[in-house]
Length: 318
Ligand code: ADP
Ligand code: MG
Image (cartoon, rainbow, N blue to C red; front, side):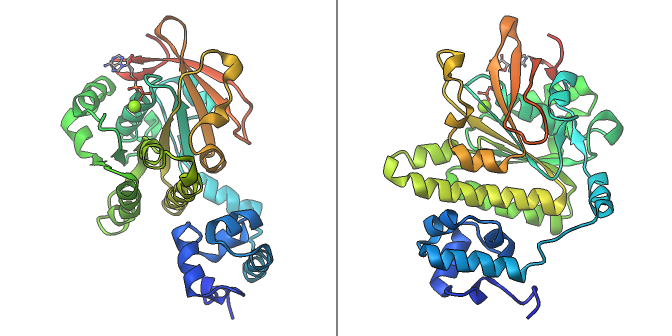
């Protein structure tokens, strides 16, 4: 049996009901099983540890776990682009801009500039590559109803893009609940493959608000994480398959002082943190500035950048 033919239902101990549960939890292919942990699978689908171990072992043995040559990787990295935020300091913090093929998460209190960063990116992705853009369009999933076309116009004019063009190049959808939000993400693939739109940036602002509201009780925490897990998997797949940059926001409570500045308090906790390649904590700084702090990103040192929100969006100066 070659790896194309081998699917979830072929795993030992996995019947149709388990296949369905796996898929619902975001484990919809052999690779997802191969890289899962035993506890992830027992939690997600209620199989025993032994079965979970067997599933993972089989998935790994069936998969070419893929040793690519350095040349292959270099070739892939050539297609990676980075969208400028509008601030050099901010871009430098994350290795040159919001990178395609991965997820960047900003979390912070209300007013910390999560949405303003989204607006700046939605405009700047439209710039040519030599100006920090990707000659592309943006998809904006707005869960809080805070998207303002007027603000896009303002930034576009400052950046030198025709305001009407800028608005045409942003596809906006308001998500009314978490299920709706997840379906909208599933639909993005069609925009790329069927409508052939050059989508280069996907924004989910905010990733977590509906999940937070709908799964308020402690009892439903596991279910919330499971859905959030699938949602993040869907986003990751889009970013990897279509070389798209993904920006998600995550609102957290303002903290009384920095001694309580544990970034893992962000809703979604490990699930969101684990999947985002770049994770930034935003806060208000001195004299109207904003501070972005890079947290637990494996490839870059922890550091901070100071930036401002101006009429023209994210900038280095007021
Ligand atoms: P969050 O999404 O993190 O809750 P926002 O991105 O909405 O926060 O940030 C709101 C802040 O952005 C406002 O408090 C204001 O300081 C700043 N801001 C918004 N619009 C403008 C503008 N046109 N010019 C300058 N600053 C702005
Ligand atoms: Mg906001």
